[in-house]
Amino acid sequence: MEEKIRTILAGVLEVAAGEIGEGFGPQSCQNWDSLANLRLITALEREFATRFTWEEISAMTDFARIRDVIARRQAPAGGGR
Image 1 (cartoon, rainbow, N blue to C red):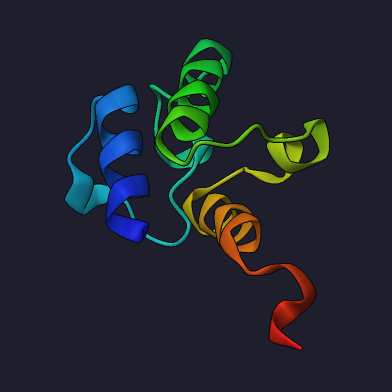
Image 2 (spheres, rainbow, N blue to C red; image 1 turned 90 degrees about the vertical axis):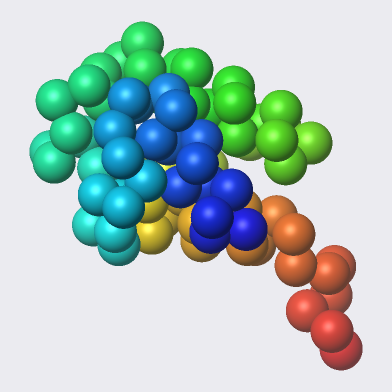
């Protein structure tokens, strides 16, 4: 999952995937503007076959938080209980 996210970020933001670490976000990437953010969300929704809520989109402010939102989306319902 992390490599898919890195690949999407790299493609949309036109950076090398190796530059994308835990804190990678708009402050560390000048290409990450509002339009790129829309393209990023759309690409992530397409890749992971989901639709994010506004709350989730607002929380997706860097690589680590994007990963966490998608991981929660992919977790089994009920948390394995």
